[in-house]
Structure formats: structure tokens, C-alpha cells
Image (cartoon, rainbow, N blue to C red; front, top):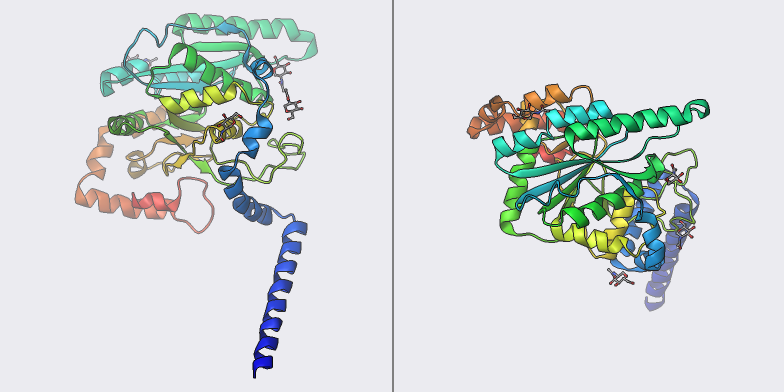
Length: 383
Ligand SMILES: *[C@@H]1O[C@H](CO)[C@@H](O)[C@H](O)[C@H]1NC(C)=O
Ligand SMILES: *[C@@H]1O[C@H](CO)[C@@H](O)[C@H](O)[C@H]1NC(C)=O
Ligand SMILES: *[C@@H]1O[C@H](CO)[C@@H](O)[C@H](O)[C@H]1NC(C)=O
Ligand SMILES: *[C@@H]1O[C@H](CO)[C@@H](O)[C@H](O)[C@H]1NC(C)=O
């Protein structure tokens, strides 16, 4: 009897060990994206908890300074400093040629005058840019000069462009990130919140302002909110836009970070990120990931807000407008959407018990589909 029991246990133990072995072999060998996500997600715990990333990215200050000591070609040192009570500094990552997008933002969600008059708060909107890209070899001088000339004129009219002398390209986005935190530190350290966004997103400014006022009243610190990527694995396919070589980032997962399309941090976090950037190697060119590395070095973790979008566009509906914060991928429809989303009709339809019930039903049908929508998550329907 005794012997039997032991034999059974031994058997089970062997079985368990074999299973584990097979599983780990499968995990290591089968480099499918699903598995890499599973691996990364478990690995994430380590990355977020320990400081090896911090250690390996730390370089001497003089060397870190090389990444951020670009010259300002356009700047407005007093845009923010003249005003004591700034709720939000909004830095929009734009590119020299996106003049139409900037125009649309200035007359919709980024209209400082409208925000001040209608919402009663001060929001400062600044577009951050690098140098126009070199065009075809033959026209190099002329076309770059032309775009730059137009920028100077645009800036004279609007007074809201901040430009440094690095080439404005995808692989220089981290330099643009450094520019933003450096500018905020130098010229707008008193803004209570800092937001960074793409120039093709829609921000529901009234909703965002109300939300930030609420947070501000509670006096929160270590606040960092957006669409959170948890345990995202680095992409090792060379064809991908987001390809990152092992030498640049050797680990299986990035620290938690928020999608670069749009996120908000509190004043203290903005300062911490700036401080971190003074001693970190900024050669990792994916800007939102690098922001995650800076935050990791300072022990700051992001929080998810279901109405911040990552890649996807929000569905067009009154019930969505009532709650939305940001939505990604809007260019041509931005005027239209701004008008619809700020219409007083939204509040009328969505308030009261009946309005809330109706909207929950609508949002369930819009957001909870069996296939991947890449919009707001299903649980947003219940809020
Ligand atoms: C911004 O809003 C103000 C007040 O509503 C308006 O007068 C002004 O024309 C708007 N600016 C733009 C660029 O649309
Ligand atoms: C980034 O900017 C630097 C400085 O202007 C430039 O030398 C470099 O080529 C740019 N990198 C890319 C990928 O455009
Ligand atoms: C920063 O990291 C890159 C690899 O991504 C490396 O080639 C470079 O030497 C590092 N810079 C410093 C100053 O250590
Ligand atoms: C990251 O490294 C710096 C300098 O080595 C250190 O001061 C800081 O406390 C570290 N951060 C964390 C979260 O351990």
C-alpha cells in the first residue's frame, strides 16, 4: 500500500515534469506572436519591478545631454510663463508639412480662446516640430527652404510653433519627446498637467478639462493616464516600422507605457520624466516606449482610462461623445466631429435615467463586438 502510493506520486511527479519540459520547449521554440505576448506578459512583472532597465540605460550626463541639446529655431519662451494659472500644457507632435492639421486643431479642440471663454480655464497649445525632411536631391535647398519659410510665416500669425534643429522623422520621435519635456521644464513648469498628442487625434476638450479639474481638486500626484500597453514585446521583424534590434533593447518586454497618440501626466511626473531623461540613453527611437523607460526609472506606473484611444477611431455617436477623451485617426472629419461632439444636444440626450439606460445599450452594441475593433474596450460601455 505504502509502496503503491509512492509509486503513484513518483509517476505524477514525472508527468508534471515532462509537461513542464514540453511546455517550456514549446514556449522557447515556437516564436509565434501569441506566445511572445504570453512570454512578454509574464516577463513584464520583472521589468516593472526591478531596476535592470534603469541600470543599463543610464549613461553619463554629458552623453545624455547630446540627445537633447538641439537648438531652437522657433520658440515662445513667454507663451506660458505670463499666465499663473495654467491647467494644461498641450504639446502636439506635428510635422512641418502638416499645416492643414494644425489649422484644423487651432479652430476646433485646440482653440485656446474658445477653451478660456467656454470652459473658464487656461490651456496652452503648442505644436512641436523638427526640420523639414530633405526632399529630392535636385530640389534640396529650395524645397526645404520653402517649407521652413512657410513655417516662419505660420508661426508669425499664430505664435504657437516650437521647433528644434533635428530632422523631423519617425526615427527622431524620441528627440521630439525630449524637446517636449525640456520645453515644459524650462518655460511652463507650473502647468498642472501636461499632455502630449499626435496631430491626427481628436481631443474632447470639454470632457478632458472637466476630468482634469476633478483630478486636480483631489490633488493627485504620480498621475499618468492614457491607453496602457502592458508587457508589449519588442518587434524583431526587420520589415516593421517598429523594429527594434536586440542591441538597442535586449529584453522580452517593454515596461508599461501609454500609447503615444495621447496621454496626460501631472506636473510632478512631467518633472520626473525630465529628470530621468538627463541620465538615460535616448537612442531607442520609439518615443512612447522611451517615455515608459523614463517612468520606469522614476518608479511611475501608468493608469488606464478606457476613453483614451490607442490606434483606433471612436464610433460616431452621441452616447460616445458624452464620455470620450481622445480618438485617433481624425484629419478630414475633425470640424464635423468637433461640432457634433460639443453640441448641447449630447448632454440632453444622454442625461437622466432614461438617457443613461439608452446609452448603455447603445455603447454595448457599439463597443462589445466579438471581433477586434481597436476602439474603446467593451468595459467602457458600462461607465
Ligand atoms: C476660436 O474661438 C473663438 C471664440 O469662440 C473664435 O472667435 C475664433 O474665431 C476661434 N479661432 C479659430 C482659429 O477658429
Ligand atoms: C535625426 O536628426 C539628426 C539631427 O538632425 C539627423 O542627423 C538624423 O539623420 C535624423 N535621423 C533620422 C532617422 O531622420
Ligand atoms: C546608447 O545605446 C546604443 C544602443 O541602442 C549604443 O549603440 C550607444 O553606444 C549608447 N550610447 C551611449 C552613450 O552609451
Ligand atoms: C534608477 O537609477 C538611478 C541612478 O542610477 C537611481 O537614482 C534611481 O533610484 C533608480 N530608479 C529606480 C526606480 O530604482
